[in-house]
Amino acid sequence: MTTLKDKVLFVTGASRGIGLAIALRAARDGARVAIAAKTTEPHPKLQGTIHSAAAEIRQAGGEALPIQCDIRMADQVEAAVARAAGAFGGIDICINNASAISLTPTLETPVKTFDLMNQINYRGAWLASRACLPHLLKAATPHILNLAPPLNLNPRWFGPHTAYTIAKYNMSLLVLGLAEELKGRVAVNALWPQTTIATAAIWNLGGKELVKHCRQPEIMADAAHAILTKGLDLTGRFLIDEQVLRGEGVQDFARYASTPGEPLRRDLFLDA
Figure 1 (cartoon, rainbow, N blue to C red):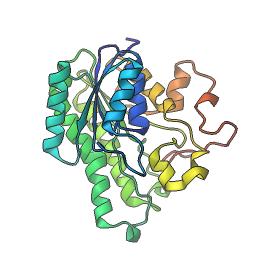
Figure 2: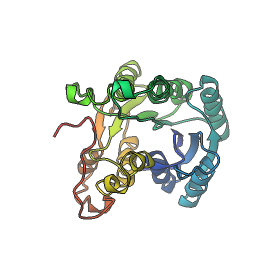
Figure 3: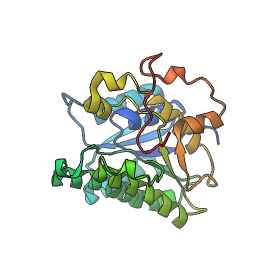
Figure 4: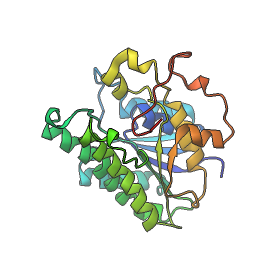
């Protein structure tokens, strides 16, 4: 399989950033995308809504179904998945992209923020995967893809932001568990960027100075496409975007740079 034509993707957090980029790459194949995200009205700090994303997906050649959904709420997730499956006749792929981040030490991490990261990152991924699973099990080449890092237990990745690391690694543990549970029936993988990616979250963390050392979300979209067009044998893997694309024969990565010529910043959880 080299195309996602007519495949149905359920993508969390697809109103902007990496989630939208993955949706747009699939749309160029003629995929059908359910956009599950909270933003329905323009936000001063976060560009994009489920409706603007749907318009972009349609313009790119795909079908789109914008669904307002707070993935912390199990009933909303189940309703969103049911609506997507009803509209498109099933679900082939679940992309767990939605995430919350706070790179803060313990005393600077409010309990509310701790809860938010854990509820969105791994609990939300588990809820979406669970709700999609009955439909995935009926699909020809089903896939769950979590935007989650490799499980690197180097303490340097815990000390500065223990709460965030726990929340992201639990998304990774979900990949480990579901891949084993669903072996031969649903492919389950993780994808993580080798460098920081120019998203709204990164802009809010470090502004223009940080963004210029990033790559664009399209590198993650191209890597995701390469993964999602593979069969069930590719499962239980913690994949890095650049490594995936090098395996596909890509050699020139300059086009992905946010600011050409600037040195790139390696992403979290990846040792040098």
